[in-house]
Length: 408
Image (cartoon, rainbow, N blue to C red; front, side, top):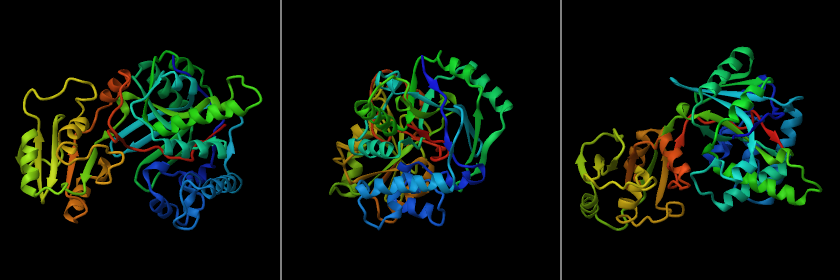
């Protein structure tokens, strides 16, 4: 069973919601965050990326940064102001991006269930990123951004969500500067939804592995240093938005490489042809799974595996895995994409034009456009207890931080 628990959200007044709402902390760097927050004292980036209010060059994991986060959070609570609901509730969060619409339930989920793998994972986390968000939660005594969870769609939950939409007025409804519409409803009569989720066997992390891992670590620290432990303290739960699997939208996570590892153009193409069937003047995006598009020397090439060459393993059969195992590693010498500075990742939302621009401008030697990993791939890998390669999925549209915070 899956535990979903209502909570007393800390949230801005409706007239300030659009100003407070901020992109997730981990999709922007310091300079991008500073530019987005410029001229907006209510932007939650002042809390999630507090280094933007310190001198340029301040180390992002320094004591000064976390102290600034506390200062900014307290200021936002007092002056915006942020206020906590008097009674616990569940919430609904709808995202509309073009023709795509998805509606999720905002709740707190059990850290115990995360630790027991009833909330399943598909990604390894980095210790430095865990350290950062764990400390961020502890100094703020709050979780300020949700984890994106999914579950196999249930008709009963879908019906309850529709009923709640009809019976509750929206708290917030605005279009952000990226043209994505965000609407949130409060659901004070939540028990039927809680009961329906109790019938769901597993939840799955779609996006937010570091936030979830950090919530678990923060709980362990608070439990260790607390005077008593009952089990229902707020720090035993972490904020999530739960979407049915048939509503999530995954974009490809494309790759660029900086150089050819001292190979000539001719040698590189020859080696690629040893492992792939190569066609010229190909589609800019692969039309189906098991094919890749490569932009190189001003031209798009299509790559495909020879018949019968695809692995049957759950992880090994992913397009991102095949590209790594048959091209990036053996041909270009890129063995660890987490640490190798010669490779970078470009979310599919940025478009094919970004790949062409980077190569044409001499900032990359080659770019690889991938077919998107599917949500069923994610569920299968998670159920098998396996780990996807880094940067396998790019979920879009993104939730916004700061609209609903969970105090611990």
